[in-house]
Amino acid sequence: MHNPSAKLLIIDDDEVVRASLAAYLEDSGFTVLQAANGLQGLEVFELQRPDLVICDLRMPQVDGLELIRRINVLNTEVPVIVVSGAGVMSDAVEALRLGAADYLIKPLEDLAVLEHSVRRALDRTHLRLENQRYREKLETANRELQASLHLLQEDQNAGRQVQMNMLPLTPWKVDGLEFAHQIIPSLYLSGDFVDYFRVDERRIAFYLADVSGHGASSAFVTVLLKFMTTRLLYESRRGGLLPEFKPSDVLGHINRGLINCKLGKHVTMLGGVIDEQSGKLTYSIGGHLPLPVLFSEGQAHYLEGRGLPVGLFNEAVYTDLQMDLPQSFSLTLLSDGILDLLPGDTLKEKEAILPQLISSAGGTLDGLRQVLGLANLGEMPDDIALLVLSRNLA
Image (cartoon, rainbow, N blue to C red; front, side, top):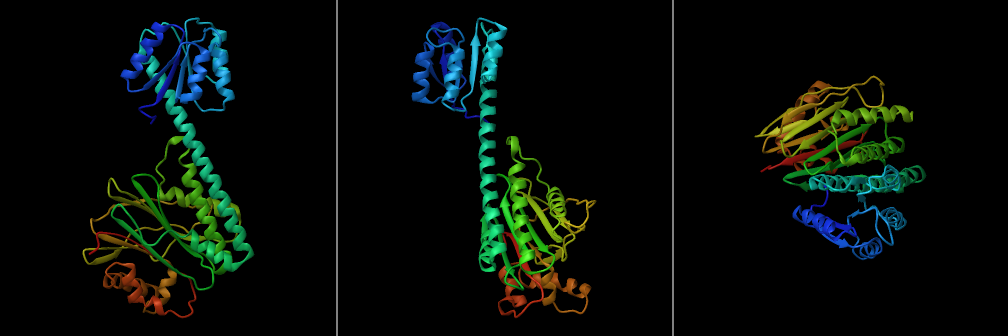
């Protein structure tokens, strides 16, 4: 995890020891600087800004403890490892209290111990800096989303602009996958929302949400959804580790958040994560109809799944389903507003014809626009959202 060519500074007044440590660490792939005493070490430190310092405790002019104090004053994140032949417990305690990453006793019979300490200290520093960056990103996202909420409450025109700006780029192409969406609000603001984003270098997440009701109050909840998923993504990276980020966990997180907010709103949702390495899709259903429709080799069919709406029941439990994605496919997610456009008198009849329409549209968003006549819609009783993700469609 650390930089394999990290720059180390060894400060020791014993030239033989210093040279021995430098030779070993250089053979291990590090760039090594040397200084013969604490004062010279500080000069090299300020000029070269090493990634880690190894210093003796007992040195003329500036000893190891004073060196740590002065490095701390410079307000750097550079770890310091103390290597001392004194072996005095009070010195070790004081060095660690001042922030030393480790305290080793001379003579070092096995220099692999020192190398392990160096790598561990560099890893810890790397994780701490990554956490700081994630925290700063989260704080920035929080400020932007708080501003978005304020704009939605004050002005619907500004609210519409904010909501549109929160939507992802369409179409979005990444590593052979293509995502495309369209949202058609029944009023000026929409209670339907879609998002897709990269979780890490091998996974991509997406969801479609349909907030109960219409207008500004429902649009307000879409901002909250964006906030909660963004916060969950950054918080899941704490400690430098990213857990499974399972769709069922995301739906559970949003369920608890909406219930705690007491907004009187609930959401139906479809969420999924694509693992590009394994080619698998993991998805979860939160009370949403119609179900996703998979189109491949000229055939279209609904995916399986069921679950409770999000934001209604404290005891709601969401499950993950998994499938292997074909080499050539599209997956269409739709809000229930689309059912108003379909022929048929009953929900069962409307649901039966939807896969046929997606097949005739070739599994593409442009095809669906034409088949459903989305360009010529008049006043609609409900918001409509479409999200199509595809790969290798002819």
